[in-house]
Image (cartoon, rainbow, N blue to C red; front, side, top):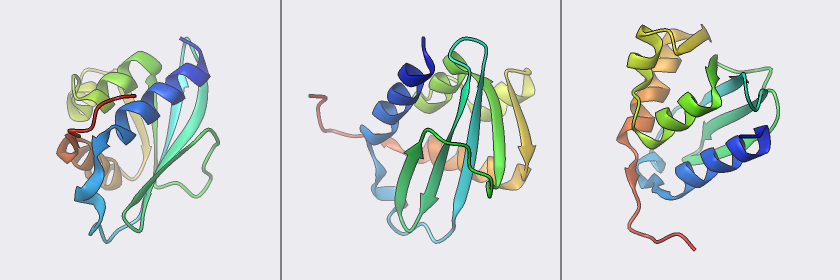
Length: 119
């Protein structure tokens, strides 16, 4: 899978979910995701003012950085691999704030699949 395909897949997974749980989210989190191996590259996910932004750029004012393969990050986003488990077994490395990384993983786990259908 290419870098562009990984970013697109992550966007599809996240934006196809019911993000209403974030509308009252009072904090700001910026997570840079560094993909290793196939599709290597960096992008960021930012939670700000109840919105989610996913952009194919490095985010220098980030709270934490996830270092992970594209395949494993997609699994984290789709719920088939928990971020804590991925970290525990060495599939995910975290730099920066562990508290923000845990907060981010809890948010990812709390987002439920939307009832809307894919186009």
